[in-house]
Image (tube, rainbow, N blue to C red; front, side, top):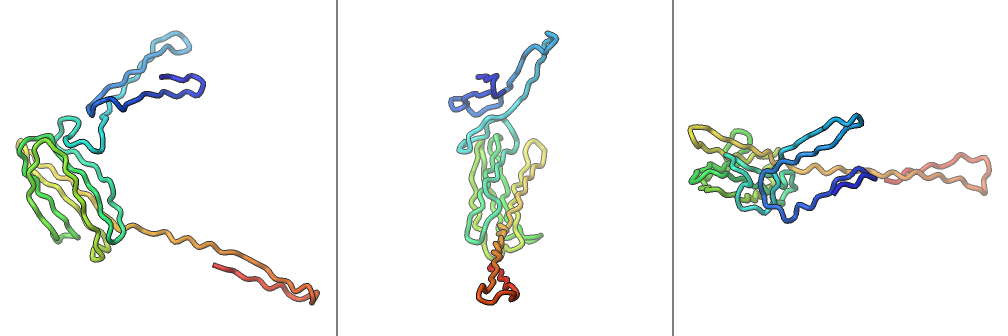
Length: 173
């Protein structure tokens, strides 16, 4: 639905299935010439159980900046059948965890608890081979940096009983 007053185009996508779509806009310019633009996009639901399009790898990093005790959330999948994917957690060049996981046209969610020992961050890596091609996807999981903002309050005190005295300045943080 096009609203020409505020130049906005609204379309309800709630009933559309997860898939690849092409949108085409056609109009006439000020001289009556046809003008057309098109855009291909992938529409998907974050709760999909399989990739919305055929692809060797599909991923979403939902939360990859964490405080200690929080979980990093990564969704990884492939539309290939019977693929063995090597899932690894690494700190630098050291492998902390490694597991082979079978995928068959599906997306899986990985919850990675962020530990105190991960202070400099870790990497989650997914690696597999299919159709004589190597695929790898790496996610850097970092510790959330808390921005501590100081709010100084400046106040001044002048003793009205002693005119001519110097003012006393105070800064409260």
